[in-house]
Length: 352
Image (spheres, helix red, strand yellow):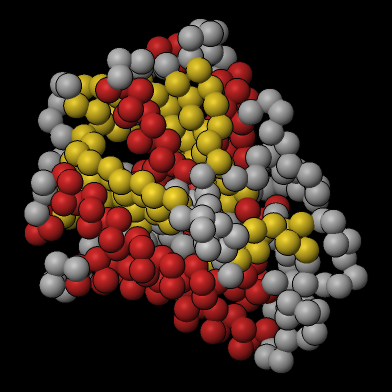
């Protein structure tokens, strides 16, 4: 028995926000003082570092569970299965459902329960729960689904990664330009086909790193200090990721028994183009090799950083031929990797 992804789906929001759309924003320093550079210079520097040209925001009438449901429906159709046969629905997110303009998140009931309700699944044995694991949530959901199947507790699982980060950003913080909305979903299933999950690795660093990403007040001192927004210590995260993610990727690959020369693609969390490139370069350096051209498909240029949705969305777009000049084929070995709040890191070696 092998454990494979038998279906995938994604939802790309319809509202496009280009870098130039931030030209009228009032960006401030953390102490509330005016930022010295013009917005044109800020966005130019931002693009040079992150590679982001535009990002997608969910339309005002949609919330995270809605777009997760849309991606889930597509994954179920792609796998050609009856939703009633699902044993688990695992919904990875970070902030729950946040209505446009609201200051509260809503996770009662859980987003997984909401999706199960929308799918009209009557089977009470289909267990639905949420996972809060930062950006690596979807990857960790797949690892959990594999564990359930291996233990004989499940045969088919739906794993969703979705987020609407545009609803929890501080408009006065330059980092708000990074974040985006999106949803991806996959069916994880026991199968007699060759391939599937070959190895996985997960780690949580909290001694010094727990609060590298956090909820904090607006940089605008006139805003209510009790209204919180996503904040990050960008330099610390960058250094942490470069130090720890390549090692986790190597441990995972070594555990799989696959030689690095057999690796066809690395699907890494779409956080920041420069950071992702540096992580993969350092990963190959651990094997005394150069990073091969084309090893790293990217979606961040047009989609931005949609947190937990980036990896499943990238996977779905890639296998459906929607990433320019990139493809994967049956039998290819790929590596999923992610890093995010917690601070959490994980990786999966997977054979198509």
